[in-house]
Amino acid sequence: MTGPSPSPAIETVGLRKSFGDHVVLGGIDLTVPAGTVFALLGPNGAGKTTTVNILSTLLTPDGGEARVVGHDVVRAADKVRASIGVTGQFSAVDQLMTGEENLLLMAALQHLSRQEGRTRAAELIERFDLAGAAKKTVATYSGGMRRRLDLAMTLVGRPSVIFLDEPTTGLDPRGRRVMWDFVRSLLSEGVTIFLTTQYLEEADQLADRIAVLDDGRIVAAGTPAELKRLVPGGHIKLELADESSLTAAASVLPDGIPDGDDLTLTIPSNGDIAALREVLNRLEQAGVPAQRLSLTTPDLDDVFLALTGPQARKEVAR
Image 1 (cartoon, rainbow, N blue to C red):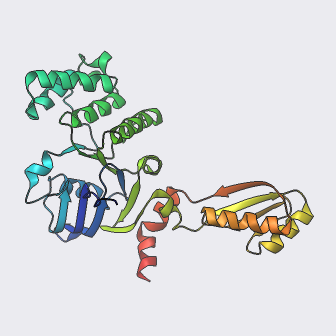
Image 2: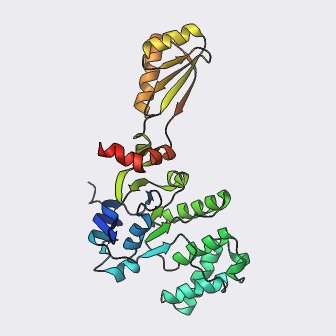
Image 3: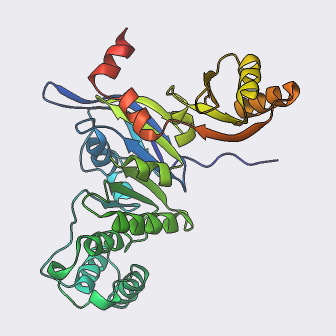
């Protein structure tokens, strides 16, 4: 017998926010299970940062409800702030202080004792590979080092929920992957990550679930695999041994598109196991051997382009 499901780490119902006549959030519903990575995708101006600012108590919503670790972001803002950490789009470290001094300052702001602060700073300096630069001013740091320090400062108070608002903006591919490794390491500690990003590979690599925000509304949500299946264009490509095999395969798979030059048959598919098994079973029953098989599915770039922007909104309105 299983017990009740744990409460979500983050939950919003009908969340709304406008600035003047401009509606930024038109009533969004989100549920983020504890101990997972949740990614919010969307074009510039879609409302991603506004969502983070509301959930981290920096903005007050105009309507709807939002709870973080069970606390209402308006009525229990202090309890929310005590449970979260926030890393924004731009590094919030003091460039005139050393890395260690930045961490000690954050420890003081978190009301840690002097000894606790020094111990925690030392732990984070080691964890984020900053030992060689801890006594140097942040002005001498590379962009990747500053982002690592920024994330380290977010962790000083051991938050249970961390908001990462486009945390790898401006980093090179190596620096981005280093940050990904740090994010993955947080999951082993039971931390919940709420990530906004415009790097779709980042969401694909890190997120358990993704929501796509466009024009202030959630237009799709699901696992990365589920979102990819929303977009047509996936296919199975079979390579056959000779023309007779190609003809036979095309007869048992009439939806396929044969290519006599390459001896291939391309069958539209959503990429799931059942569809792949069906193709292989039909070939086996017909006694047609395939030399090679490849599977292509849409990526998150395809999903993003298909679901966001003016043209996508026109399609939905029809």
